[in-house]
Image (cartoon, rainbow, N blue to C red):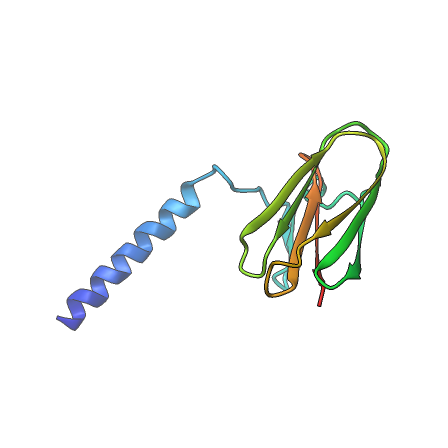
Length: 130
């Protein structure tokens, strides 16, 4: 019985692994693999070095996000709690300086992950507001 379960689990693993190798829906082509095992991806996947945002705690449970945009392309701000639940989402389309204070005093724990970006760039930071 143990052998049958072992063979069956190996067969399922092999089948799922081969399917994952053939699936190209969300795969990215690798440029090269070095001897040390480092994988090099195309530069178009790298973070936009021109976009950055700042997080600053203002009070317990409150923080400010600020960034500067030179174009009118939309930037989406997403705030997640510790276990990955989306708490707030906002889209900013105007160019120039953007600053906004978020009041999350009613959430526990006071650790949040903030993601800001658009279709071609994305940055993620975390903040503790205790």
